[in-house]
Image (tube, rainbow, N blue to C red):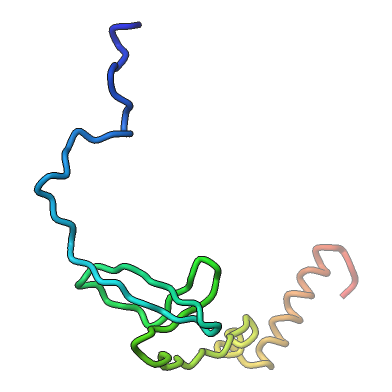
Amino acid sequence: MSDRSLRGMRLGAQSMETESGVEPAPRQNVEYVCEDGEKITVTFAAEAEIPATWTAVSGKVGVLAEGGAPDEEPEKPVRTHWDMLLERRGEDELEDILKDRLKILREKRGEKV
């Protein structure tokens, strides 16, 4: 058993590579400001696309300090199951289907129709 164990190194905890000669990728610091004045600084890669808003760890949403508020995207109205059903069928057709299904259900239960 002792000949199978690895010695002298913690697996995955340390790297044998050195950091000499390694340059980090170019970065930029971007500042966001929340409604209450809290400032959030986020580091992005230099070529990254900067989002107009950023949500802090505290849950507050900040907007870019160097730009205005982002344009609000129009929200889609919520489509319910009933709305989608009415797109496919008319109410008269749905009434007929309901009557047919109730008739089948009552016949299975042994009720008089």
